[in-house]
Image 1 (cartoon, rainbow over the protein chains, first blue to last red):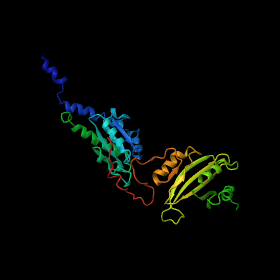
Image 2: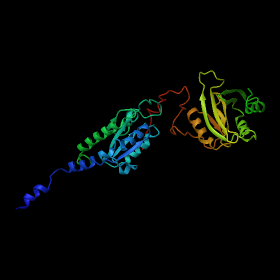
Image 3: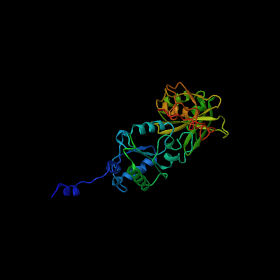
Image 4: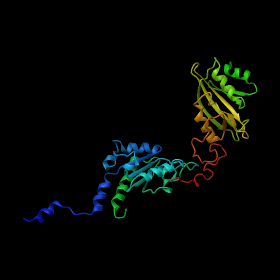
Amino acid sequence: MGIESLLKSNILVTTVDAVVNWGRKYSLWPMPMGTACCAIEFMSTLASRYDMGRFGAERLSFSPRQADLMVVAGRVSIKMMPVVIRIWEEIPEPKWCIAMGACASSGGVFDTYTLVQGIDQFIPVDVYIAGCPPRPEGVLDALVKIQKLVEQDSIKKRK
Amino acid sequence: MNKRPEIEEIKARFPESYIRDEEFRGDISIVVRKDRIFDIFKFLKEDENFLYNFLVDVTCVDYLKLNEIERFAVVYHLYSHKNNSRIRIKALVPEKDTVISSVCSLWKGANWMEREVFDLFGIEFTGHPDLRRILTPDDFTGHPLRKDYPLKGRGERENFKVVK
């Protein structure tokens, strides 16, 4: 009985990317950047009926330094945008961003003097959620899409 | 029906200010000229019979194209805790002279409400301790709640510089 036969059943060979991404994917720490009614809908997504914890993202970070997913939920005015950018820059890499709802994605119905017409003019957005506000299912769908993005990530690409 | 004593008193004491009064479901409004507005409020606050000690709200109306005597009206809502009564004073402000006396020295709560009216309507309050913009960004130009202000702004959104 050589050692080789023992190794066969106890060692799994894989890539670093696969392991790291698997870990990241199921433990996203979202940072809610809630400015309006979408944030209320986001809260209900976290609560027991829809339970975002099933996807491993129930640990909300209220500090950007301990988050890797920013959820911009609500309208962002031109006075608020520098703050959102600052918070986005405070999140350490790797990080992802969800623009939740019509206002964050495109300005929504507020085509006015005060509102940023889509946060993607200033920060990179990975997933947009349609709706005003989106249903919790939409938020969960976006989370799964983010998980797919995380899966495709590579630590080699990121420096 | 007899008119409320506030109306008669203001009519008697400030005849040059009084324009008209309105009543709707028991709530009265008195429309006045802006010149002696501070004295009117001082009287309403300090007179033994009225004691309007609480300033509920300061806001403004733009009567553009609405056939009012002047273009703007600064609207004050007062409440008397002692008499449990409310009154609304509308001070008409002409477009050419958008200056009105501040009531911050009577009610400290007027501070931010007057800043808001200044920010959104461009009414200047003389004697205000800190008349800065309160809602729009500091470098904003124009007063967006004026009815002739374009909804999409005058390039504030497009020329917006993000400070990093």
